[in-house]
Image 1 (cartoon, one colour):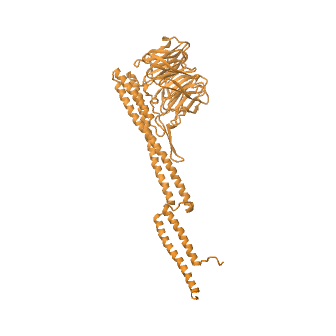
Image 2 (cartoon, one colour; image 1 turned 180 degrees about the vertical axis):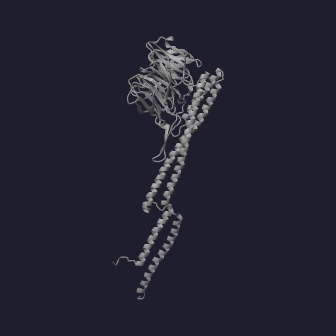
Image 3 (cartoon, one colour; image 1 turned 60 degrees about the vertical axis):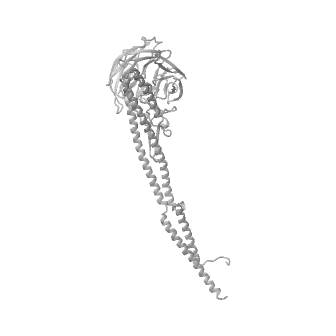
Length: 592
């Protein structure tokens, strides 16, 4: 049409070439400005998505790196806590050794100093928390969860339970002794041994020997194989011809046995413990020698807190005895006999008594007046028949809720703070309970053994390295109660008490050293993982950069080349225009 603009072929080619140069120049300018040759999907779909995957992986690894770094900080907090707490333990050990040859007045001062330092030891552990995680001090979780029920191997009933760092030992009516290994991670139980003595009312032991008492007045001695938990029966002692031996408990030097002699009487038997586990009887006393029982005494129990011996019966309350540290001779001090007492446990200051009825009672022994004083009674219809404690809470084995949880404050006041229920609650009064600071184990009579996890969320740490790999680091509860060296039990009054405490203290120091070594290994592992993750982040980013980054020198050269081409293109278009103009001049200029 006459109004259309027509370009010659030469002019059109020059224009297209100029436009292409402009596009290429814009691309080069963008690369020089951003430093990338692939800025979006339009710049190169294949390279873009490959690089995006590499960069996303690098970002994910950066997040993992932050988590690993936080894990290292938590381990540093634990290691620092152990380092400073270990200094306290060394100071306490020095005080105990000094007390060996000190005067009575000096011993008391050294004891007071040691108890003060031990409380400071616990405070150091408690303050060694990083970001809400504390790997060396656990305050049990009130809302503990039921994690396992273990049926008994035989057809009998679980009546007694006791444990150490590695194993749980269960005895009971029509049952042999069952030994279960404690899983270091989950706290769950795996049967490692079933055998030994049968029809045992109670079980107690130490690192090398296990003692059980039976319904046939026999006290059995077993040697513990620490490598696999198996028991080797050694010998037995016949401690009378009357009804039943119902309870056994021990300390560093003596073993104490409760004997239900039938009728209106019960007795305490004191035996010296020798290094090979064998025993020599030192003393026995009937409670009828000091009181008139209110009725049939029923099963009797024993507990010692390192200072005094407490003897409880189900019909005649609680009796307190002093034990001569050299001869094992008993001296009766006081009693509270207006209630039934099925079991008693204490922390060195407070005693908690399960009376089997509606009450749990807190008591204290007054050293000044040699009297046993009741402080409080919790009347919650709990039907508590057995007591355990872990340094923070008392756990009562009940016929109503399974496990009732209590606190006892500095004034001795009892507060019920929670409960944990097994799948089935026993209706039998012969139930027992044991706690180790992270788990609670209930010997639930006909229902076997129930395991509850009471660890707080901050007592373990999971560090993720990738979507598929991680490391879980579990806490080691190093509080003084869990190590058996809590302040109230420090007694420098006699060489026997000092020696016993030093033995427990050496074991505690060994455990803190083991924990420190374990965390050092975890620290080295996380440090290696941190360095690896940093390298992987760099590797992924470099791989992504190779797909997306521009060569700035090459792009600068391209820009110069394009500038030259652009000038040539402009010259070409100008030349094409001049050619057309010359033709017009020829056609029209000569005829004018």
